[in-house]
Image 1 (cartoon, one colour):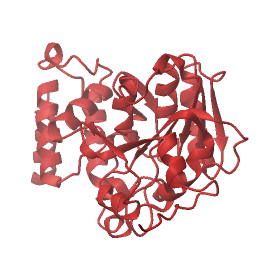
Image 2 (spheres, one colour):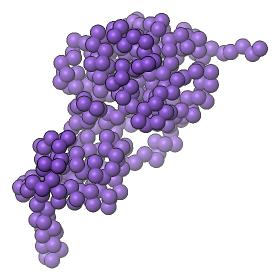
Image 3 (cartoon, helix red, strand yellow):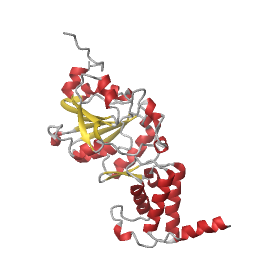
Length: 317
């Protein structure tokens, strides 16, 4: 009885937004949660979830810190905090949304939570590696997931049509929700395909991809929050490069003569360079460092791979 009363009293003491934030941060830190889906720490996660559940602007905390909450509002927030801890569910799955910059996307457990560093590069029009961003008329997004990169590309390159490819029918269903939300159904085409296989013959100015790239050893060590995401969107095989090899091998015939391929590989730079020592990738700087994303021009791919996708063997001098 005393324990139940103490819990009730503690609950009743949470009267303001500030109180709820303090409580959430304490609980998150106590539980040892992992933050890697858009928020960097317990504070950011708490602010996002509390503001979202109270239907307050996500970019305006200060005016509401000392606002009193109703009993029902408090209960909703506390239930969300408890679910985040007990089920180790990424915040994006709890709210049904994820953000990349100014872009909001619908998400659920059918897709990984959008967090690609390629988005940062698209915000800049892939400059300076793309010579003429305004001239881009065709983009291919492989392993599109929620469709986030395809949608950003369509916005950044207004003259382009975008093919957004995924093998997962469930992921494409989520992508369709996002494409429709941005009224881009006329310009973004969703394609169920195992990479290039179901695509008609066509050459693209830009190919982008954030494929599954987590190596086998790392998959076994993923935090519980990542285990909530679709395995097929994460697992990249023994060295993380199962799909990356196929993307590289098939890119040359799919690119225009001055086209560009951009691929995200997380922490697998060493494996990429070991597998393709003479490829000459350019590693791009992002907020995640200088080893997460590389680009390569069509001419370099043509020199490196045969038309059937095999690595060309260099003759010894």
